[in-house]
Length: 172
Image (cartoon, rainbow, N blue to C red; front, side, top):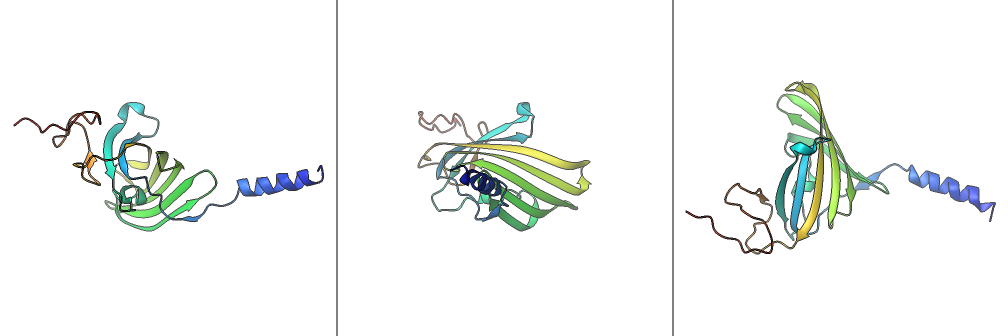
């Protein structure tokens, strides 16, 4: 038994430091998700919204974190024992953007991500932008909630998103 201990420790060390392997983009469980996003380390600037993820088996919002930028290429996902990673090179209003993200969680009920974008040359005086994303599945989507639509309280007639209350049409 004592002779096996060094071998087990060496094997465990190698697997713990193994390079991430290529992976498919994660797909969230369909349903209503609460999303919180904001600059890393700045809790006061967090934006919250709801999103109905459909049953179609794709999740374009999560599959392409660089999509707010233009013409993303070299997009790749990889995975290790603890995290899922994303990398891409994108165009950003006259600048090149290197997007790198690290996600943890099961993507079925929750996840947390950190997205770092490095601009070259600097974009609007900023060379590095870091954001955090937290997602939590709340419930199945209501029948009248459109898939893929961002629901932000107070915008476009969205009121209380409390699932226990019926949706009321805005007063005209």
